Length: 78
Image 1 (tube, rainbow, N blue to C red):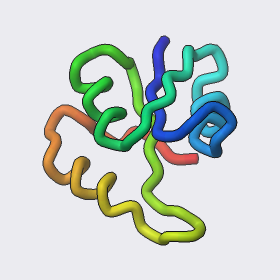
Image 2: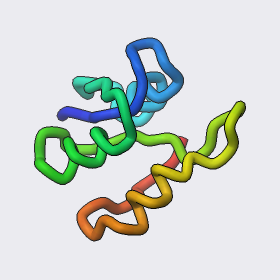
Image 3: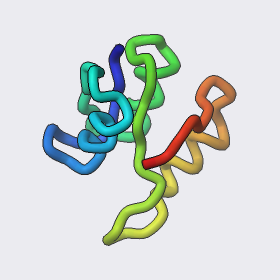
Image 4: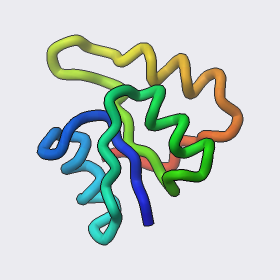
């Protein structure tokens, strides 16, 4: 199983991927938009994206993409 996430190896998002999907191949992405693209194209089976950041607050890009994509659904949180 392939799981795309926003961030670099060692980031909190990678930890979330490995917590939710321990046997997954984690796919780091530079942006939330790329995570959505990899999921909607079928390149990744799932995506893990932030909705809140401890320093910056809400991650508006994630909310906008969720609002405008009928192909992506929220299935959990960590």
